Length: 354
Image 1 (cartoon, helix red, strand yellow):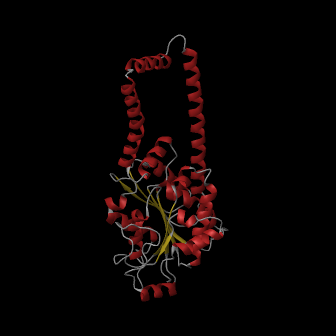
Image 2 (cartoon, helix red, strand yellow):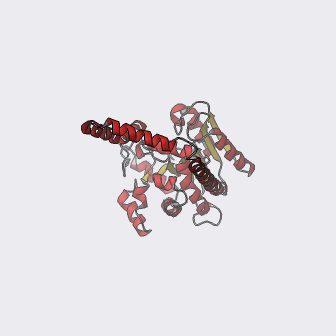
Image 3 (spheres, helix red, strand yellow):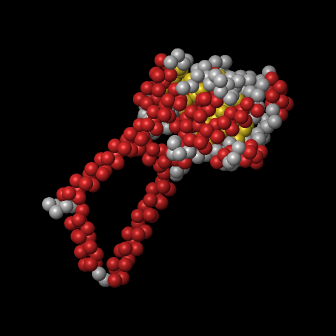
């Protein structure tokens, strides 16, 4: 095993394919072994190149390399940082797996149509990197719709006849995914993806409070509160319905209704294309779905509908359904059950060095 690939080397591959996708996707390649002695852990900064193999027995990893190391393709959720997904890297590496990590940028997730080409390029490059390591088999572990958005473009390359069909996929793990696209859910996802919802609220409050404070200051300095009050009354007269303005209100209502309907149809089309791509998987691997009944972003009913469609198509479906667990927080909520489900879907209870 050659150890983690520095981001500058991954970046050279990205430059050859026309863009610095590796930096944008926080790509890192980590060897198997215990992460405790210096590699990026759950609370680490998790920057590029984190987990440089400190504490990894090089003789053990060399032995792994000679027999073919299983590889996990770890696809993080929108807005996550390397330090957020490092606990999953640690979990797999402790089982003897190498980990190839990638996190899609927010724009690539929130603009599913416009950013399709960027995601396709990233998926192709990730699988090219995975194939270059000659793994004994591949496990895909994705989180939320952000990870699933990348996986959807890996599927055609791994399906029979695809460019990387020779990669043997042992299992696919869906953590808090997938869901249908909804405007409200998208806004919630962007809110949580900010990494600090409280900071987002503070920024929004400042954006409103600053101009309001300036206006109040001007009124006080000019000594014309009566003029400001008269302007407010004129605005309210224009806003509130009256016999003179009913046509304006009807026109505005019609425009809003048409806009909302067009938006609904476009979102439905995006969801249909997204699910169609995911349902097209024919890699022949069992699939594990980990989800919760009180997930604020991905409703359990969506995951259930999707997994039932996968089961109906002949896929070996495993499930871990939790009553109370936050979005992409299931490992923290039920660690033993989570690890047991991973071992079961892989089929051999994890791997051990020779």
